[in-house]
Image 1 (cartoon, rainbow, N blue to C red):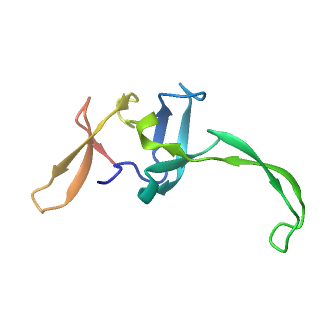
Image 2: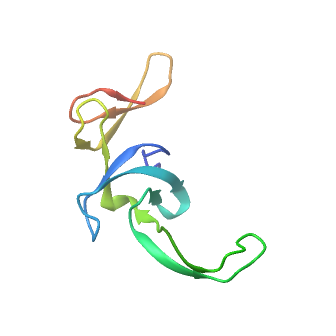
Length: 105
């Protein structure tokens, strides 16, 4: 089953420590049903210096969030919403807002 949320969508966190915060989706992990959201669920990781990362130390980065803990924010009505899927006449499948019915790009 598809997530219905894509990279660069704006989402709202509805559960957990980050509840109420908005962010932009950086990456989608479909096989794990998880999303990386910009500046949400930050963790500290202790890194050793390597060829890739010449500077070692403590690095802050985003940890994935499960899809059940977020809701998509509609760009038209600016409210958190579920996603409905519709088929156009030409057979193309689109995402739509459940609240206002507008097509989500």
